[in-house]
Length: 175
Image 1 (tube, rainbow, N blue to C red):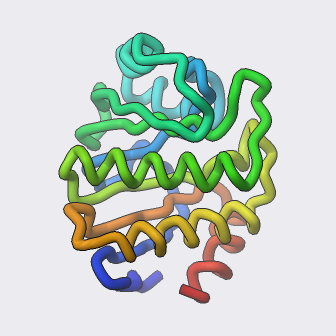
Image 2 (cartoon, rainbow, N blue to C red; image 1 turned 45 degrees about the vertical axis):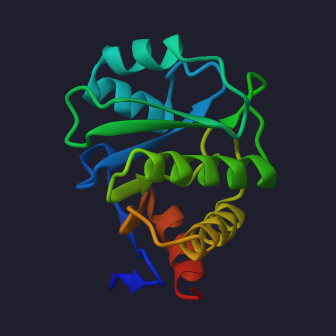
């Protein structure tokens, strides 16, 4: 799919495995304790190494909607941003998806990195509807872009399932 240039950032979507992203940062859809269980977190821990979880947990717990950064272990990325899209109750919603997306983008900007990859936040364990997630995340990306100029030049959304890709593609075509 062709990339879309906003004012300051280029936005891309792809179906794939976020742990293999060609970006400086990948975002983990975390819980507030920062323990890495299943889904995106489990894949990051499995492929990047347990040291990512150890470092994350040492920085937690954090408020739902907040984010922290760790090293990326054995992954290609330079950093992992753990965005707490849910609390210990494992529930999420529109406000937490928006806050987590915003926190991840702001932290990536503070780290002066040029590229970031995000998953569909809150749609796994949190059961947030994928179409609503896409809507919220693209709204936050556009707001972030409006705050430029930015160090971040590329924002990539990497969707694991075909269903998630299709629903994000629908929203992507609207930006």
